[in-house]
Image (tube, rainbow, N blue to C red; front, side):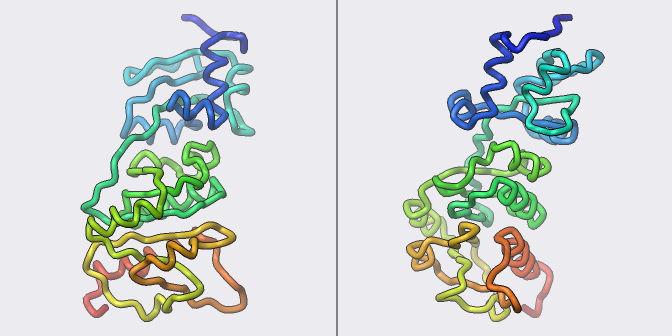
Length: 250
């Protein structure tokens, strides 16, 4: 069994580079950390590689690279270095236009995006569209916050203004979230057609041009504060619309 101990090893140098977005994009590979996330990934994907300093670890699902604890520290993004690190290819799943979608406009916080992936999955949303200026969904903080949800989602990145026509042709109702030009979600009607929910940037919300192209915009009535975290807003909105499946009186 070969155990790699040098950071000058060419293979290790290429793996360490994956901590940077430009190299992730170049190689279309990203790093997964912790046993839980690797287990979740293996349920849905064939990992390219598992890296470990546990020399008793074996896998019949992918190659295993044995390295020293020092190498694990160099590769890891975590304070507490995990015993397993996975290398996974980019997720290339097209949007399934049979189901609802959530669209994110310029989300900047990777932990926010990861948490919202979990929320989408919890409410049976498998389709996510990211604007071109959204944070990298393969950012380590996003991967960790998603808690494996990312491996069950169809994710694409598009120019949203160009993509509006595609969603309309696919017979989606475009639903925006805004504090202006909007009605209270308390007064919403039941919507039978497919829905595309648009959530905006943490500080600025949705672009004005996108708001103007929505079929309808909703706001969430709140007290004592100007706005909610976008992740909280998403959970409330999806919860409200999820009730349509069960509440015959809506």
